[in-house]
Image 1 (cartoon, protein in one colour):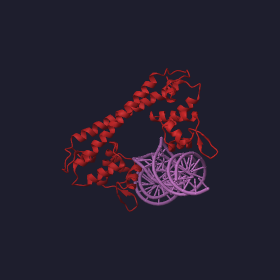
Image 2 (cartoon, protein in one colour):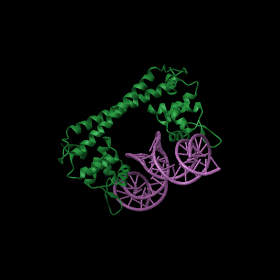
Image 3 (tube, chains in turn purple, cyan, green, brown):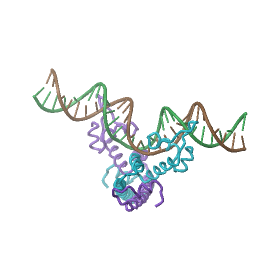
Image 4 (cartoon, chains in turn cyan, blue, green, orange):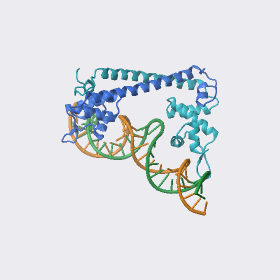
Length: 130
Length: 130
DNA sequence: GTAATGTTTCCAGTGACTGGAATGTCAAGA
DNA sequence: TCTTGACATTCCAGTCACTGGAAACATTAC
């Protein structure tokens, strides 16, 4: 299977698939003409990567997950621990964004938003008392 | 004022301050020995940058905000529009993260998390039916 | 005088791709 | 058969916002 088809099957752009090969996440064989040739197993790995990445796992975490995927004797505890850690990270990020949103909202509410030059948002950024 | 003091005053590492100079966000004068010399106005700009960055504005948005900060005839409507747009972006990001968290949580809940090799998280990433 | 600290410039690396150029291969239609 | 267009290859560079490190020079403290 050529790279474009592999991309459609895995929902990844060809550029990304070549990149994943560069960093040794996948090793397709080559056809006689030098084209990459993706097997069904390769597609499974690519789909796995696409899903794990879209769930916010980093490339290195994906590499680890793939090694667990390859390992028939893996312990599900390892995978669960990674997932729980990822949930913690997501929770922290959500908290940060909520605080950020509150600050921005407060700034926007105090800005009259017309053509007058005085602007509480700029003043706050500049650190002026208000 | 030397760069380290400027960094302390603005809560930015010296490396970052030099970087901001590289990309023309700030232009300190130079002392006779070649050291950068930061004025009080420079510190204001740096603090402004630090605050705007920590509120999630990109460097290019900061550049724009700084030009509004410099411009005594700016319209506060411009600044408010940027802030509201940023709030929208933050809202979208929070939504994404909430969905992501729900998926991860669902996966973790269905994983027994012990030494057995079968793992619903891996199976889901691999796209297997469950 | 010397050691520690601070400053300079420059180059390279991060993460995870993405864009583009130059070149080669293949399949379909006139 | 020729040509056109879609697809493939490699390699280099750029993204964003820094960050790390090396080599060399300046200043400060003891």
